Image (cartoon, rainbow, N blue to C red; front, side, top):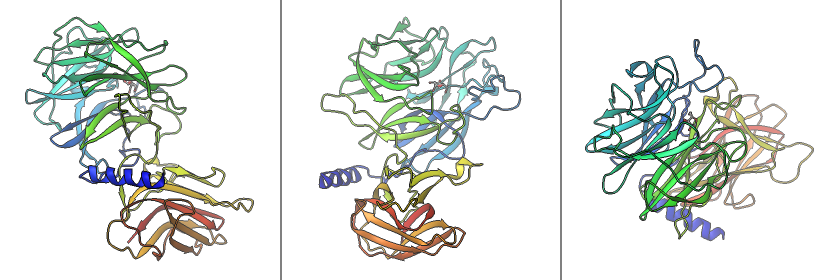
Amino acid sequence: MKLFKNLCIAALAALIAVPAFAENPLISGAFSADPSAHVFNGKIYVFPSHDIPAPPGSRNKRGFNMPDYHVYSSENLFDWTDHGVIVDQEKVPWVDGKSYSMWAPDCNFKNGKYYFYFPAHQKDGRNAIGVAIADNPEGPYVPQEKPIPGVNGIDPCIFIDDDGTPYLTWQAQGNVLVVARLKDNMVELDSEIVTVNHNVPRNGLKEGPFMFKRNGKYYYSFPWCERQTECICYCMGDSPMGPFEYKGKIMEQNTDCWTNHHSVVEYKGQWYFFYHHNDYCREHDVNRSICAEYLTFNEDGTIQQITPTQRGVGITPATNKIQIDRYSAIGDSNHVWVEYNRTENPFAGWKTVFRNKDNYRRPIWIEYDRVDFGEKDLSTAIVHVFARVGGSGTIEFHADAVDGELIAKIPIVAKDEWQDASAAVLKQLKGVHNLFVTMPDGVLMHVDWVQFK
Ligand code: FUB
């Protein structure tokens, strides 16, 4: 089984030409939500919405405050370039410039232009969906004078079929998902608005639709509040206008963040699922952050359910600072957990806390999978660690299992300050392995990252 898992990892590594080593959340330093991911010109572009803490003068102190849109791009899903504000509520002629109502957008390419669709409040307070047009995915985008005639609602998704026909789907008033064909000019409807026949088995709010095509089948997926919070479910069909057959959930509801919102994209032979969570804001769930996971299809085209992770996607070079708090698995939560480096600034990231309480005898561990040790020997293992005086001990690195081969054993002399402790690499690894970090002895240690040189 372990051999099979390692072979799969190696196959994945070979498939992804550009090394991808993303961890969740993808964007730090600003909140981002409702990620709409597309591949343009060989790069991934994500068009998220932009949550901000309620500004003075906001009419919506407890809800979403969303003033503008940025676009981000990446070639490896780890290094993201923020191309800045592409559409601003104050600069769209039809939008109420103080409404902070720029909810989930989408973008697509046709006839040599990029068309960015976004919802917002009109000056009379009603929701409409407008378009901004650019020659490049990064912009500059020019907003149209007026929103799309006849389209009221939120969460537009723009799907372009293989024959070039554009379809717009969105959540219309009355909790109903609808779809219409667009004219070739991309800014006017070319058909009746049709209620999407998705055959979801039970009631509950539905919003944020996303449509894509694979092997001739149309996939129609959307957040659905079946119980307490939103899961992401999907349907399949033979036409972009439906009907669709309900197939199940791609991601279950989670407990911390009421909304979820997603997109699906294939990039360099790998399918990815983008979604959001409130990782950088634990007090409430209206300041969110975008994440990504692998998406896998079954032979019959159905989708395997995805569990959100901290680890995210991709392979991390062993020579990087490896943020083990973005773990793939973790031991007993009484003895090892993750917390913010600085509670007053969540964007400063996380650390792993190892604590030996009541003379706990089993290993205290955390796993970070998919680390690429390369082909050359590495001499030194480093841990960036904080241990209080009286708490000296050891941090160990193991390969592929808690009790797997010992890669390094690093003595930690407690200093009451952050330090880079290091030791010689005992076991040379080649290629991709899962890294287990353990604290076999010691009392309380905080680890920010580990690294090999
Ligand atoms: O981001 C604001 C709204 O929350 C979106 O439009 C919905 O899809 C939900 O994510």
